[in-house]
Image 1: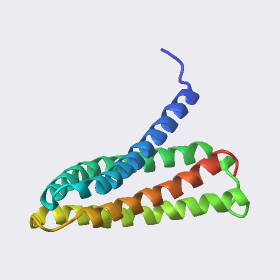
Image 2 (image 1 turned 90 degrees about the horizontal axis):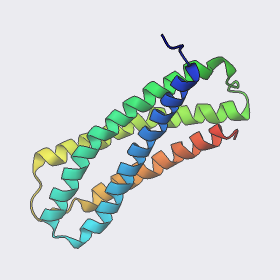
Image 3 (image 1 turned 30 degrees about the vertical axis):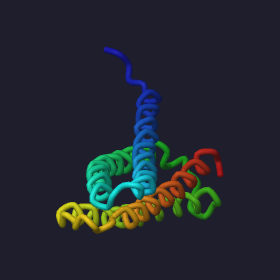
Length: 158
């Protein structure tokens, strides 16, 4: 039997964490950009295209959120006692990052419910959904970039 190497497991957990964030952020950027480019299409085609992609992205988004939470908790468990207290600069930033994440999840649920409702409503051919969808994915992107900035600064001692 091979010996268990906790460093290998830690590497896998961190890789899954980073890959999940890349999927979450990359999909949001894709939908934001698609919302911008879709303005050249007739409204009915904009709606079909954006809702088709958004519905699929939301499934991947929630899978990525689940993996981020699981691996984040795993990282906390592995590093927990070695982390600085919340009274330190690093600890304060870490608490801020956790607060951003805790607010990101319910805000994202609102976005997902919007997508589900729009998809179920079958919007009229002249309704233009590109603007609200572009805006909601722009906000998702900016919020995720803020969390990512916090994570990178914490990982590098900031």
